Image (tube, rainbow, N blue to C red; front, side):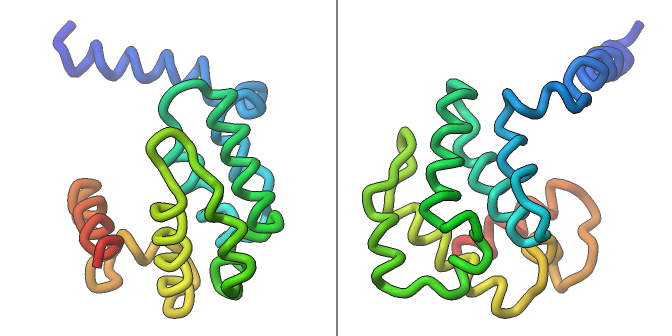
Length: 146
């Protein structure tokens, strides 16, 4: 069996192990599952992914804490939060992710969602599907740090 086949077999085993509803509750993927609105799911998933290094319990706890600071409406919060609401975020931190990082992300989401209905557009150069995952991620990186 060549390396590609071994890797594919490994990934297929992992899909069987983790791609099941019972896995969700104890994984950071539970955070976007708290929501039904597409934009809330996108924002919650983004933060859960950013925080996803280290202990899963802590990642889930900090992600929930952030969603609660956003009144469990992250999309609306990002679009409408004024100075008083944003000030509530200043004490938030998770590992190396601090309030400055958080406020930058909120401002990014505010700017993005004022122009687009979905975070998907942040991965599409020229609003066209990218040719590769690498191109999509590279475009997102550039767009996010504009």
